[in-house]
Every structure is written in C-alpha cells, then in structure tokens.
Image (cartoon, rainbow, N blue to C red; front, top):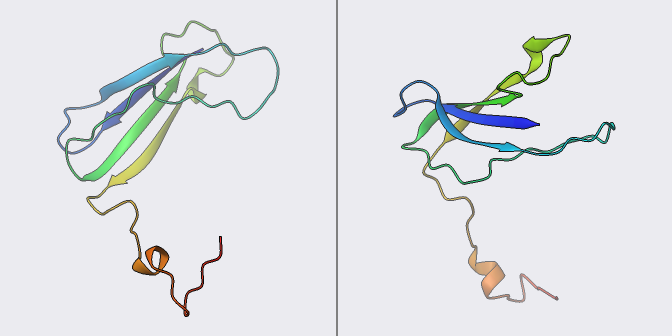
Amino acid sequence: MAVRFEVSGPGLSGWVTAGSTSFYMPHTCNCPIVASLPVPFSFPQTGNFQIRITTDPLNQYSECDESNNQIIVPISITNFPDYRILSQYIAPSLLNLRTE
C-alpha cells in the first residue's frame, strides 16, 4: 500500500510533497496500521500548516468508495522549546526528595 504526505502553508507554494512510503498490508484486520513519513520534514517558518495524507495516491486498487483515501490534519508550528529542564530535578533538596 502506498501513502503520500503533502504539506501546505506559509512559505510554501500549494501542496508540497514531503515524502511517500509503501508497506505490505496483509488481508487481515489488525488495526491500527501505522504509516509514517520516512524522512524528516523541515517547515520553512512558523505558522499554521496542513498535512494531507493520501492512501493509494495512484489509484492502483479499485474500491467501492474512492472518496475516503485522504485526510487533512492541521498543525501549528511555533518556535517555543519542546521541553524545559527545571532545576529542582537537577539538584534535589529536602523540599524535593528524589529517590531513584
């Protein structure tokens, strides 16, 4: 099964292909099936973007409902840190006992 990832938003012209992947999908119902972007994508700037994920982008498999092969997910890119390190976890005190 082929899956294509596309991104649209500020600093991009239309839908930009971020990458695609393919994987074997057995004829069972082992859910959930996960498809992920094979390479990292760097957003050109901060802002609100959309990611479009398309399954079977080349229409290789005929289906009774071809309209359910895409999903568009909104994403917000900021320049805030992903996490922060607090000093109480670096230097435990009597107020913050850390026993590990």
